[in-house]
Image (tube, rainbow, N blue to C red; front, side, top):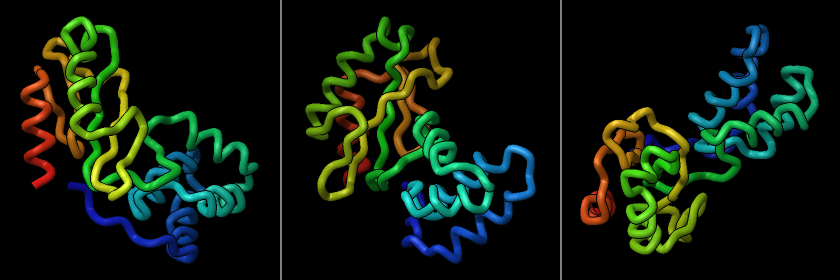
Length: 158
């Protein structure tokens, strides 16, 4: 389970941003650090980063929305990522995803109302030879099937 995120704190976010401000290509590491600290990249961070890096808000927002690992809203306590790439689809990932969606009562890129679960598609985890693959709370998973995904979900929920 990921560590608890801090509540938004502009002074802390500025400190993080300024750590990378004079580094070539520092915007992405700053975004990663902001997300690590706050659990997502809030709109206030976009404004602050644009100011610190002397770029437009659109450039910062573009980076946040281009890279799938950045979040504009907090994720659930547990994040389940399931591979949607062709190799995993050929190995049965579509049925695994349907089991997970039904069990969690979520669609792709949704978080439940209690903030317990987020379900995300990914398009390759590098586990193509042992698909269907996924990741639960940062732990890679291989050779998934419906029964195993149910067991993993139930185990994480305890």
